[in-house]
Every structure is written in structure tokens, then in C-alpha cells.
Amino acid sequence: MNIQRESMSLTRLLESATIMKKLLSVILFSLALFSPAFADTTEDVTEVFTDADAPAADQSGPSNFHGILGPALFSTHKIIGDGHTVIGLFPLILMRYKDIAYWNIGGGGVWLLGTDDRSLRLGAGIRTRGGWQPGDDMELAGMERRKGSIDGYLNGVWKTPLATLGAHYYHDIGHVSDSNAASLRLSHIFRINDDLRLTPSIGATWQDSKRVDYYYGVRPGEVLPSRPAYTGRDTINANAGLAGSYLLPHSWSLLGGVITTRYGNGIVDSPIVTRRYSTLFYFGAGWLF
Image (cartoon, rainbow, N blue to C red; front, side):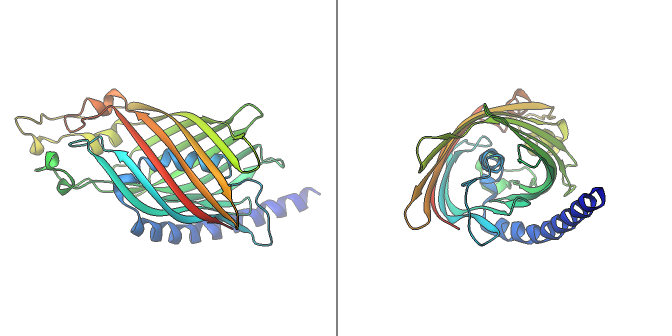
């Protein structure tokens, strides 16, 4: 029996490794479609759906692939530069393969270990991180480009009757800033009826000084009379949100929500940051399969 279990575990790990390679190509393709302006703000949204096996944990059918595909409208407040609102229409991608792999707008991963009832799972994945260019905002004129990168991460999800706890640890495997980050999130799915589900969540994200300094710091060569030098430091951002989904006839669904982030002092003290709070609204319709 032990030999059989070890064989099954090895098969699962090999299957996960193969899927991870395919995930990378899918994610790189989605990167070409997605604006860096939204890459950081959507991570909180996609983590909530990933923890909940979204868009519908009870989907069934002959295919091993399940998810939702369709267009979505995103609106968020920039915190760098003039702090104006950015609106964009982008593809809504939330997919999973069996109970092994998942991918979304800007990242994906595989589940490597877990209990039989899937109440506790451990996995690994990759996600994108957006950068910015001086041409994105007049307030950033004279500064050097901050490149986007790819984070590798380890994550765990623990589901209980009261709430779902999700934890992530990230490292910049693109070696742009060689930085680290971590997040904790609590959420709970309320099934209002057979069609409507609401998922409130609260969370916190820690970013180390390297990450904050690279994306929000001001280097000596970038200093202006109105823009003093700034060296970033560790910070913790807090957020709260509400995600919802509504099933429509003919395998379609509406998906939307709002999430507000309060940025920590390590970011807000930067002279190029003009907002402490940023709110992301999103709404879309997609085909469930």
C-alpha cells in the first residue's frame, strides 16, 4: 500500500511539472494582452478566486479543464504620479485543470500536496509583476524605467467552515529587484442561492525594502527640487474587498467586485506616490466550461 501511495505521489509530481511548463507559455501569452498598470492590483482579486476554486468549485463535466473566459472592465486608482483613474478592458481568465493546476490573468500554479478532502493544500506557482515607464506620467519625467518581472511563489490554502485562509510567499525570479513579498488573506463564500455567490475578504501584504525601493524609490540621479531622494523600506499593505459571481443560462456567468488597498508608510512616504488608498472595480461576463 505504501509503495502504491508513493507511486501515485510521484506520478502527481511529474504531471504537475509538465503542467507548470504549459502554464508558463499560457501566462506569457496573457502578459501580452494585459496592461502592467493593472498587474499589481489584480493579484488580490485572483488570490481570492484561487483560494475558493473559482469561479465555481462544484463544476463538473467530461473535461478536466474548468473555468471562465470572457471580457472584463477594470478601473483602478494609480498611486504613482498624478494618481488618476485608469480604465481598461481586458480578457477575464480564470481556469483550472482537475485539482492540480490553475491559472488566471497574470499567473498560475500547481498544487503539490493536500489532504483528501482538499481542505488543506500546498503548492507553487509564478505570477507577473508590472513595472512603469517615465512616459506613463508627467510626474515621473526624468526617472529611469522600472521593469516588470516574474515572481515565483509558494502558497498554502486552509479551508474551514468559518473561513478560508490563504498564504503566499513570493520571490523575484526575474532578478529585476531580487526582492521578496508575502501575503495573508481571509475569505468566506456566502452562497445566497443556487446562482449567486458573494465572497468578502480581508488581507495584508508585506513587501521587503528591495521591492519598495526599486518600484517607489527615487535615485540620486532622479532628484528634482520637487522630488527628493528616497530609499524604500519594508512595508505592509492592507486590503478588503467583495467578489461576486452570478450564474446565467447557457453556461454563462457574471463576475465582479471591488477591493480597496491601504498602502503602508514605506510606499506612501515616497515623493512619487500621491495616494494612500487605491480602489479597484471590475466587472465582466464569461463562458463557463
